[in-house]
Amino acid sequence: MTTTLFVVTLVVVTALVFDFTNGFHDSANAMATSVATGALQPRVAVLIAAVLNVIGAFLSTEVAKTISGGMVNDAVVTPVMIFAGLVGAILWNLITWLFGMPSSSSHALFGGLIGAVLVGAGTAGVNFSVIVSKIVLPALMAPLVAGLAAGLATYLVYRWMRRADQEPAAGWFRRGQTVSGSMIALAHGTSDGQKTMGVITLVLITAGYQESGTGPQVWVIVTAGLAIGLGTYSGGWRIMRTMGKGIVEVKSPQGLAAETTSAAAILASSHMGFGLSTTQVCAGSIMGSGVGRKLADVRWGTARRMVYGWLLTLPAAALTGGIAAAIAGTGTLGLVIVFAALVAGAAAIYAISRRAPVSADNVNDSRDVVINPGEGEPTTRPSEAIG
Amino acid sequence: MKIDWASLALVAVTTVVAAISIVGIFALGVAALTHAPAQGARPNAPARLAGYACMGVAGLIAVYGIYLIIPAFH
Image (cartoon, rainbow over all chains, first blue to last red; front, top):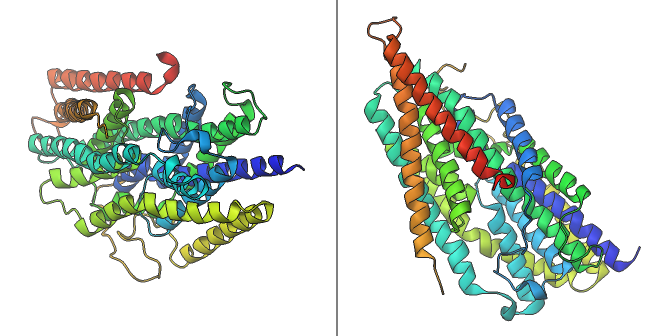
């Protein structure tokens, strides 16, 4: 096996692993409020989200032309840097998952790449003003815009219908949630599904295995689609709990308002040129739906920690990606060491998560994701009937 | 540094207007379908008709959303 083939194989495997973490990290965006209100049973919710993600991945015809959207100079990016960036992104995705923190997978990927490029090619390879306009500003705007819209929508619903969260109205809102959550899942598949395809395709082109300017090969589409689908189906229950229960106790009218707002914001931002992170939009919508309902208790401590997490995502993934690039850049042995460290790190995080596991069975039982059993605030069972 | 404030404003306004309209129409439909004249009674026929009309409009907006999501359509 030649070195190039070895590197490419490693990058493809790592990219698919990243795609998997992307799936379970973002499962909550589409389904957390539907799970929290009982609109969908947890396992049914993730099955729907997974199927729609896979369909979305197959539907997306236009694969990302650049990996980073101009944040780094793509001309200086090598497959080893992409590998290191993916390692940084995967580890950050796993750490945030352990703490139940929703954070943007795209930002983690960008961060990892930026760190790897900084180490591999110096500051000239990184475009800092694009980072501010494409990461920092949207990270501040997304929760504000989505929060405002969802807050107003929720306020209106409760203004008109004093008994909106009681039967039979609640049942209608739950039915509506099924549709709005599904829209988010489908939109997610078309956007994030193709990111990994783009990464793999660019690596294949860089390494000379594929003609420049050609689209992704069928096996790339199939494996990337399945990786994100499997990731989504695995649920990411820790993040699901934070999004559905940790920020605010969501009732079905709020869930509908939050999901509809998220879907509208995602579609508007992807069609009008100001890209907003799906995760930050969805979290902002949920917060807004808490503010909009009278007496709803937004847990601002959780919200604040989440925002810190968003601001940390880029530098933390960049640091990990940079370290990975420094080691992997030394040669084949370095690559193997980084890959081994990734496997060991992932295994360690998974082992820690087993101390206080969150699953489809207990996702709604507590409001907090904790590392040690026994901590955290339990929830009262939702008063709405599950039907 | 160039920040595209115009498209940011456009996205923000579109999101707010779309969210309020869609949720509003849906809530109106729910209100019409669940507002019974007396305890246990069904809503009268015009209310039900209006309710289902609202649901239909919300459904059409969802279909438009699917059209926007799938790139092959445009």
